[in-house]
Length: 112
Image 1 (cartoon, rainbow, N blue to C red):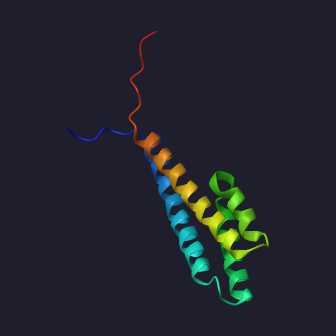
Image 2 (image 1 turned 180 degrees about the horizontal axis):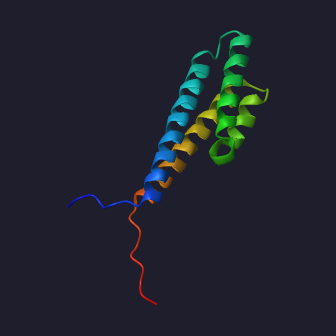
């Protein structure tokens, strides 16, 4: 069975979701790097937190508003890493759901 044909709007939406997925991959990499530097110097942790806050703020309007705030806050590194990792997983779940919705063919319109 051939794959269903998608509308131009669906293709545009899929492209947007792929952009968000690339940004989420970058955020995941930064959170993993932060976790790896857990026992590192305070300055290194602060710089990574700032990078995460900046990257998340670029996605803020759509997905990662709270993640940007979490990365910018002070507090324990373990709590910050756990919260950021959960936020990244949440973003992936949202993107998966959006992709599933975007790739579902539209239902044919019924005559009135």
